[in-house]
Amino acid sequence: MYVVFRKELADHFASRRFAILFILVLLAAMFATYIAFQNIRSELTPTTEFVFLKLFTTSVKGWPFLLPPFLFFISLLIPIVGIALGFDAINSERASGNLSRLLAQPIYRDSVINGKFLAGLAVLSIMVVSVIAIVAGLGLRIIGVPPSSEEVLRLLVFVLISVIYGAFWMALATLFSILFKSAATSMLASIGLWVFLFFFMSVFPVIPGAIANAAVPIDQNSSMAMISKNAEVHGIISRISPSTLYGEAVAAILSVPALGSASFLALMVISTYASGRMLTPLPFDQSLLLVWPQVMGIIALAVICFAVSYIRFMREEIRAI
Image (cartoon, rainbow, N blue to C red):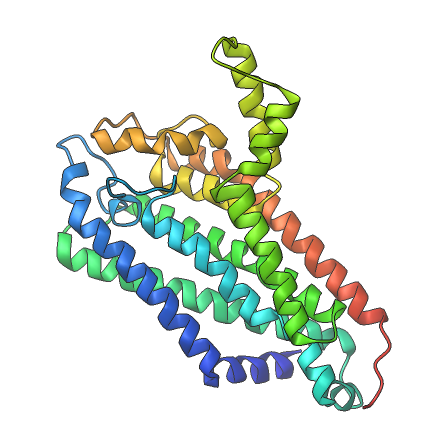
């Protein structure tokens, strides 16, 4: 497996795909950081805590999304990176005939899929860590405020959650690369599912909203209990999307550490922190307990996708072309 891992890692770093993806993510992060630099002073007060984290959580007036710009672009681009690293992991080798020749060597079949997935995960991790480190270094030089130990821990957890989030999309793309013989088909299937889960289930939750309104209809005369029930159903449906789980987790870790809940409604309260009012932040261990269900949900989805990929790859018949 180490031989496959090393070969795939070298191929990723030497490819133009990696360079394009890294530049794309870096430019988006730099743009979001520039927005934060332009608006960070308006959000700072003498009582503001976690000043360094404002680099990643500062929004701008008129921003149309719930998540701040940096978190939004990260949640948008990490799936693209994961899909790009996994959509042709198996079917490209099969189409070129390299897969049958590779398995004819004294190498276990599971070493192939494990090595490819771990190599892609390593590239994704290096990319996420590098971009966040570059942004943090620029922010440290510009604002001149070093991070506290708790802020560093929160950033490390943020990096870990981001890597897990990317691992799900890479596992999903790897699954499609096994199910479909054409790399173009697997790419279209992966992107189509990403568009559905990211935009229609998370960013613009029209489907969860329609289901919630059908299950618990509300209007201007509805009681608070009915409104809360509608919001609860809305949150349950929207959490089918890993993008919603990721948004809730990073919002609780970075944006709103003082909230007592990381539910769907928690994202709507992010804007209250732009007014400068800051509640007593939750301790770091309590924040971890708060986001644990969301993180475990993403891990479970990633494990399911990779397990199905593993079983299907181990059982399929591979013939020489």
